[in-house]
Amino acid sequence: MAAKRDTGLPYQWLAALALFCVLLYLLRDILAPFLTAAILAYICSPLVDRLMRIHFGRWQLGRAPATVLILLLLTGLFVLLLLIVVPLLQKEILLLTQRLPAYFEALRSWLEPLLLKYFGITLAIDLAQIQSMLTEHWKTAGNFAGQALLIVGTHGAAFFGFLMSLLLIPLVLFYLLRDWRELIARIGQLVPRRWYDKIALIAHEIDLVLAEFLRGQLSVMLMMSAFYAIALWMTGLELALPIGIIAGLLGFVPYLGITIGIVLAVLAALLQFSSFAPLIPIAVVFTVGQVLEGMVLTPWLVGDRIGLHPVAVIFVLLAGGQLFGFAGVLLALPVGAAIAVGLRHLNQSYISSETYLK
Image (cartoon, rainbow, N blue to C red; front, side, top):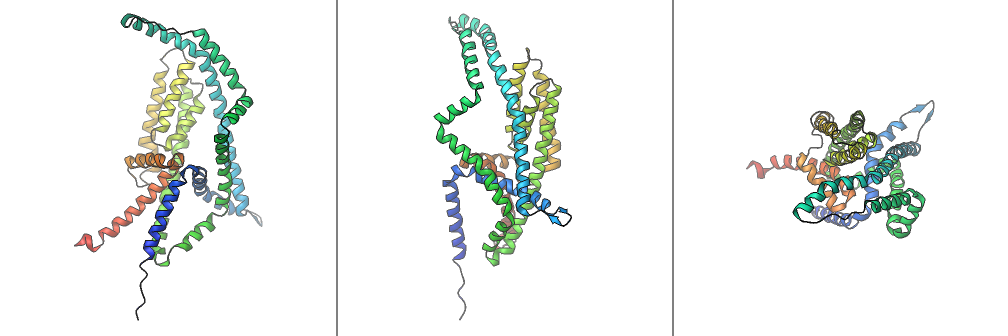
């Protein structure tokens, strides 16, 4: 008697996949720390493997100590970034509070004659009151401890949730990095054996695409951060370093880094200089930066490794952000790369099928 074929398994897998997607959507508000930790674990796992291959005589690092070293390195880089950016942005806020009344006066001297001429109205702006209000608020904001306690008191739940999410990232990252190989092996054991070779091939291609893309994108971000920081410093901008770092590091989202960089640079220039002439070299810097990134660095270091058209990249980023917030932006490109690889295999299967060849 012929054995009965198992035709229910594919439907079970489709049902499980649908249930997983529904749960993913329902839990989207708490996914950010876990997705952030998972992406960092994927990026840093090869570094942990390399540390484990280093020998000191007969002594060799285990996976847990190597993971701790990588976490310390990431923490040090994060703290260094804060020490560079935060004090300079604090200085920018102080300049803004001091010079904003002067800008109000310039705006009034230009706008008030036009309003009086065409509408017969005047602007009743008390600049002394504005200056007093800004100074008072700046003194209050300068008391960091008191301001922090005020925020905690008025927005305790939101602050607690943010703090827990922030603390979860290194904790989840440690366990993921330490057990990364075992987790991958366990996932592989769940795959039906008849599908294992094909799924392993697709997963390997996805891994190669993501690894090349992430390495290339990280190189582009670091190079563009250095370029913007040095070029803006040459224009005489005092806040060149933090603005350059922010513009370069946010370059992984299309047009976000350049937009925020231009806004911050123009604002800093208006606060630092007394004329609009310095805005010209700043515009040249960002124009050259866009040409350098789009026509030299990205084709050279990233190329078309992710397999997605630029319009598709923008779409998946916006879709991920709409569905899952910041966590969706983090997950959008890896998911897009996986979908692109899967679609290529489906296309090959379709082309070689009888339906296409008939």
